[in-house]
Image 1 (cartoon, one colour):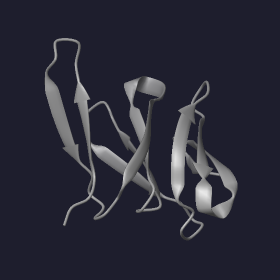
Image 2 (tube, helix red, strand yellow; image 1 turned 30 degrees about the horizontal axis):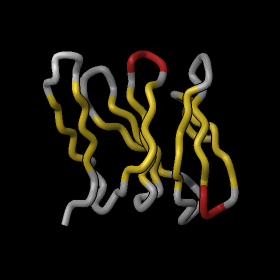
Image 3 (tube, helix red, strand yellow; image 1 turned 135 degrees about the horizontal axis):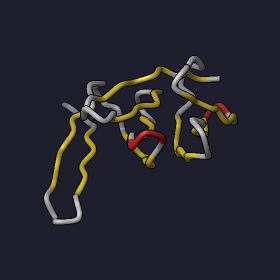
Image 4 (tube, helix red, strand yellow; image 1 turned 30 degrees about the vertical axis):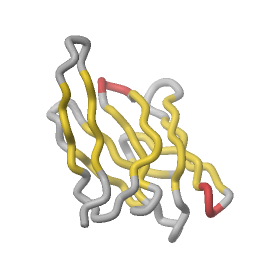
Length: 99
């Protein structure tokens, strides 16, 4: 069973659906980021993902096993911050990767 998709409405009410490639991803947090990208976290997939300007989903695996990312927020420049709920940590991701 696939357990993960993101949808968006435009200002005219049109709906677009994006299936997340990771099985049982469990997306929970979502925010706009730099360059008109949409960023999200996958609590069950242990992944930070983004939908780029070409509507492709790109995923970044969190190196801490079972960190359970739960929320993501955009700061400035190219920094996004993510809570690693089960690991009791906070991660920063940029276009260069997770730190």
